[in-house]
Image 1 (cartoon, rainbow, N blue to C red):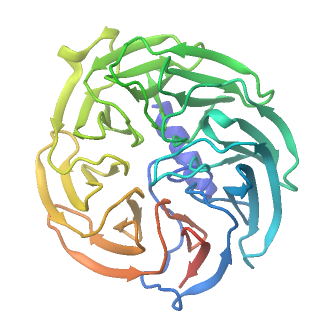
Image 2 (cartoon, rainbow, N blue to C red):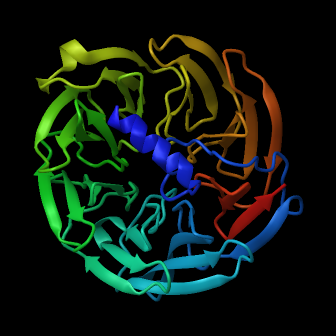
Length: 402
């Protein structure tokens, strides 16, 4: 399949270029990274980051890219930064846009939560309804700024953009008139906007889309209010959908075994596995399995082989058979979770919101292999590159090495 070819090429690059890694699947490849760390152990450097942002680090060509929002009176300076991966020194710190009055957000959110994408010397940053931009990776020069994708945000921004075939796809599910859009990565112009076809009771969500290759064509997997929809990447046409009541969807869908696995609700989360493909409403024909027990509201599920790992916001970790949904284990880790689990060093890393990380053995039997802890709030998903782990807290960016 073309999807498998693209995945292999991305792994060869050995960079962490977007949310959840080069393939958006939460898999860290390359040299082994540290298994033990703290505020004083395995620290290559620790760099204070101004403002607040929950965007994950993106690491390409020896630089770490982040976004942040710095208070300016009643407003905000929405910024992008590049940090030297060797030294931790800030290379450039660029204002992308100034906002006179900061919109309200959820207590767990930030004004800079979407993760940057880095490709071919360009950095793509997204601040939800406050705009999207392309910057030069070399010096942070803003090459274009798009503020056309307006919508009334509820609780701030959240979903990261996805880049495929020259289009940046973003989900714009606000408090009314939700839609999915694609922006031309070269020009910054809107390529298409597709209103949601389902009129939901509550219309906002914060999902990061996923692109799947189905029958040789790129399809955008975009859960939304009260339904899941797949769109043609080329023109935004809705191709098929599954009806499932729910709102405030956050996790990024996971692909594997001919399935797309996604969450459809925040208050009463449930994971649903759908067979890829079809046309129109495939609710009755394509749903393969579904489970509510331990389902996440915020962290994205992680697929490793035949096993699907996930953690609820309240700290219940699970492993199920990805093809059937049959449960292998379900255990409490402790604490609350927003960061998505990552597969690194042949094990699963779960990071809670207060800096406690738990290594869990892969497979059908639950076993904790170790824990580590650092001070601060940790909502951003860790990033891995060249044998190092990059971890962002509410105040600092850490680089850990063996």
